Image 1 (spheres, rainbow over the protein chains, first blue to last red):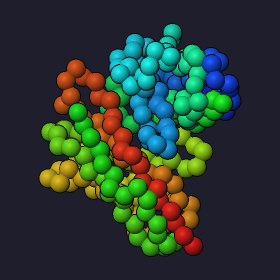
Image 2: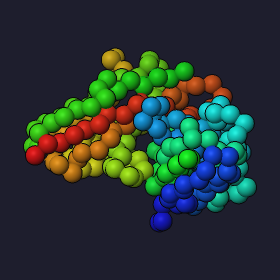
Image 3: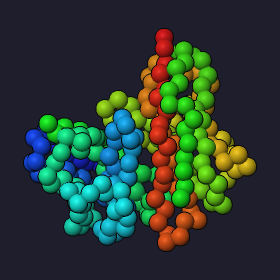
Length: 114
Length: 117
């Protein structure tokens, strides 16, 4: 089992540019989560999908952030336009069932916006 | 809403000493409880979980945790730590009583365990 796959692992971009982060969950898992981790705010849940449908996006900071899950094996998190305060590590996690069980995290994407 | 409190942001300890990392959560009838570990530059990985049954749960790498319903706590312990245990530890709680069936886990802010030689 390859685990949760995220790409890219590192992204450096200039303010104003569009950034797309990608995630491939573990096969058979039907819950997917996007998190953001910073020193100041810790681990924040951005959005949660169940069976490819967004269930809770209350953590998405603003309209510049959007997430999609077109099928069970792929999800994207897009930031447009990016700002320096978006610099963080972004994690994708998947889980069997509705998410009450353990989550399996990807290695993360470290985003730096200059 | 569920809240999870990890009382110590940082815990320094010497190698081979015992350690306890504390976790408290807001009251609920039914919860699932988890501890995750995050090594530098890696994602979180599950250390142990409590779903039901025995309140003493054993996990990987010699860690264990005890569910105390009356004190709404789930403290993590290890009798003898190694240098390699240096990492960030996160407590997480899934509240099964939340309406709408959305069992999204709530994470604590994390505790940094620093093991000195």
